[in-house]
Length: 318
Image (cartoon, rainbow, N blue to C red; front, side, top):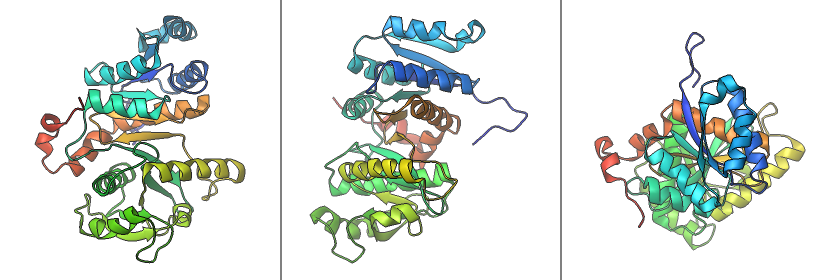
């Protein structure tokens, strides 16, 4: 959601983990600089080694340096926890990292807490299709989930499609190896009746089993539910294919290398560890855009029935 032409964009304060990523810190600094220069209302909290943060500050026009702050952390795990703490204590509006997914998910759950009913937060990606775009989750957070977690992920994905994409009555499908009843492993065979009976938010409805081809066409569903292992394999395969062959929509962008960690008590965006500076800049921009739309809080309202209890009932891992 963009501001009206005569309105200034809402300030967005993003805590950035400078040590996250395969080529950190150089690629993170590159991405942060790109995002910073593209968005005059973007403020960054740079979390990482003093010399790295200071070098980035020095590269910024002195007139713009009031939009940058630094927080010294010399270890990646400490940096991940620090960006989450910045959000938890109101020093930042969103957290961003391209580091180890397991570290990010654990830190987010412990520091920010999880929404009521969410046992496994879901990394949520948006993919281009031949007809538009769809939501795919999980893409790497919960690689071995149970039925309860995947039913919750269906709820999370439906809320994302409604709030971020404006889809009325999102169609939710379960990814497996065929559309005939009984296809797939034990988990995939047990889930359809549970999804069919589940109370999905935003008027969403479960439409059945889908295959990998449905993710490309986008004809059958708006939300595709998968375990984190399968979703991650699919996502990386599509990334490579679309980079070589182009996206299915022609003018549609390629697969974004950033995903929202949905189901935790704050806006947390995770970028592919092998992402480029452009990829990381896109991830930071995604975090800023979600904050400006109050998207995470609105999605929580859809998923958590009692809107007034969500902040009081957010659970934290010990």
